[in-house]
Figure 1 (cartoon, helix red, strand yellow):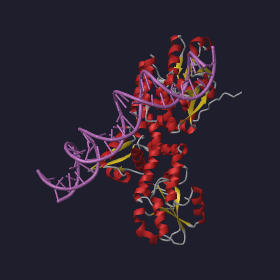
Figure 2: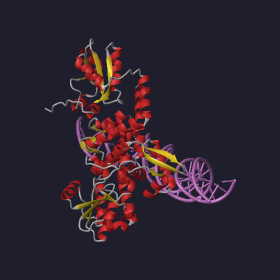
Figure 3: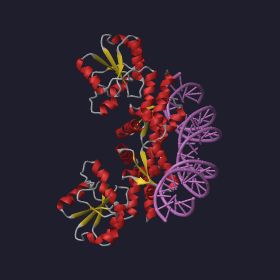
Figure 4: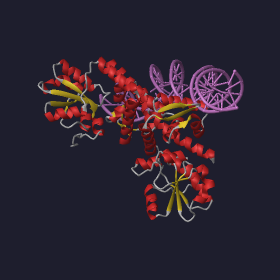
Amino acid sequence: MASQNRRFKTAIYEQFARIGKAISNPSRLELLDLLGQGPRTVEALAKEAGLGPANTSQHLKALRGARLVEAEKNGLYVTYRLADEQVGRFFRSIQMLAEARLAEVGEITRRFLEARQGLQPVGREQLLAKVRDGAVTVLDVRPSEEFRTGHLPGALSVPLKELEHRLSELPRDREIVAYCRGPYCVLALEAVELLRAQGFNAFRLEDGVQDWQARGYPVMVEERP
Amino acid sequence: MASQNRRFKTAIYEQFARIGKAISNPSRLELLDLLGQGPRTVEALAKEAGLGPANTSQHLKALRGARLVEAEKNGLYVTYRLADEQVGRFFRSIQMLAEARLAEVGEITRRFLEARQGLQPVGREQLLAKVRDGAVTVLDVRPSEEFRTGHLPGALSVPLKELEHRLSELPRDREIVAYCRGPYCVLALEAVELLRAQGFNAFRLEDGVQDWQARGYPVMVEERP
DNA sequence: TAAATAATTCAGTATATTCTGAAATACTAT
DNA sequence: ATAGTATTTCAGAATATACTGAATTATTTA
């Protein structure tokens, strides 16, 4: 009887550990994070995460085995996506726990920003105050399909890749605050560096859209035609 | 520059993976779950989780390395506890994700209860209805210090170990609903089996105190004198 | 039908993890 | 001091995981 209880508990915790094993590897966490921004093909994931295609495929298989992601084949491509929104929230809870408990996360970020002369990022409330004063342009530098999925109210979409060719669209007499996916996403940082080099008065917003939204701030979604 | 970005991302996801690695092992998850019920010594944890002391100590070291638990030495004993309440919530989010995404969790539980003739457990709303009708005794069968930390309003504390000797305290003309730590805790199940064998009209509550509380239901805490 | 491409699988090597029993440590109580 | 106890550390064997490049599969296009 007691051993029946033990077997039951062992079986249950083994199931919980399937989730744990899935998120026990840095590459898989990066893949999950990317998929949290929207569906991606294996190729796109491999490129963004700096992995080989075989390795990427194997990691995705592991994530699929834990039912955290789902795959759909369209012709030659296989598109992966998070299995549901609960998985995205779970990823953010790992991130928040790591930020709260592991001092190294803050350390690493601070050192990286210092090396890049990343200056002080703008916080949520600071940005809102600037917006109320009407003296700021909010710039979303993520790929445009991520902008379409949800973006800050009034933000202008100029993906980092296009930024250099579209500088004429930006005001030189106003502050620019650029944002991307969050504090560990480097798109906004690169944008700010480029803009400053061109003489713009640019800053980086600390949050990404999902943090912004998770804290109850409004997010705009593009209408599907 | 690009490789600097890559190093930064790798370093950050490695940090997130420290959390993942900590929860990638069934025994460590069981230890975390136990610590979620309250502080415990290494010995107590080892016994409850069915592990050897060396193994337990090593798992606890791993949990400590991920800053999920903290240790405090009192004389001969080392008492471990969750590092903070966020860790407890995180554990429950793993559990909920596993329940939602892994069909096996429900399967295993169902088969176990069937084998034990576990009958249909009582749900939250069902219990509240019974309480309103005034025809039910609510029984907390966890160790008494867990009862003291928080229990259902009006519940009677009779730890499973004492139950056999304290049957005279229980009413034979009313329904008894026993509960413990949650759906994977076997204390209430054992209690119901014992009570039924003695002719009581006993049922098992599906929830544990923490689920109950997490869903906004009231929980009583014993005053510290 | 053949060539090209995305994705997966396979095999092999390097590395990490888990568990065990023995030894070492740190305290307490006699 | 000595014996006893809880805990930790250590060393080693068994197993699992991660990554690589080559081979295979599935699909599209020429």
